[in-house]
Image (cartoon, rainbow, N blue to C red; front, side):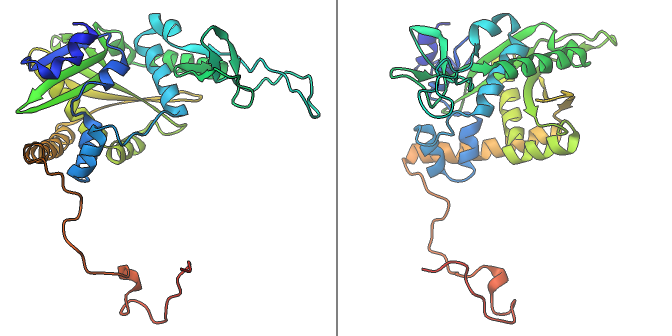
Length: 327
């Protein structure tokens, strides 16, 4: 299936598809509901529509850029150098001041298309240069390599190296709604080397974390705070729909992004996936109704009565409160 085919997918009668090698930009353009849309749908249908129309965007960030590079190194190591550039330091020199004539040597971020090996910092970027989307600094490149090594040495490395597919795009239909998901890796069902059982297929989701955060308490708090349980439920649902009707297991793999690069794999239990799927289906039901009526209500539908927060009410304080701001 070509990029053009999948961009037309939601205008076809095909109800479940899987695509390998689809660029993320093409995946992002597919007009279908993803787990991010579900998160905004939990706020209101007005928020969800705004997200679906591209009016809400978190943009790019250093963390996202680093995460993309780490994913490429772990899941597609043979393509890492083709996908991710290692930025050199800024090639400009200072034209004035105490450092006049000295090389800048700040980390490079910008480059000119005709001179891809020439890097510049934000202060010295020349006219016509642009911010490189997929790059790492030399220091980040080393850290990412060490993260990948730590994953290979860990017992979870056996699963990561099992036969499967990486960066898999799924598109499927639920009632009248198109859904999509992008899996870090899908590991096929295979004989379990430690028993006579057949190991279920597994959806792998890699999460980098800070030093000391590769543990159950921090992982579960992040899963709840970021709604990753809904993402897990969405991905297992899509994989079952698009990959032969077999419901896979789901595993987060947390790896620290600095020494000692500790690893913590956590398999989603049934209750976690059930809660996530219940939230997804509630939002989809509301979304289908909103689309059908072309009415997208916000969070609050009626005028409320109130003013002061509970702690500031007269029966909660003994002395008058003074606000911290004037106006």
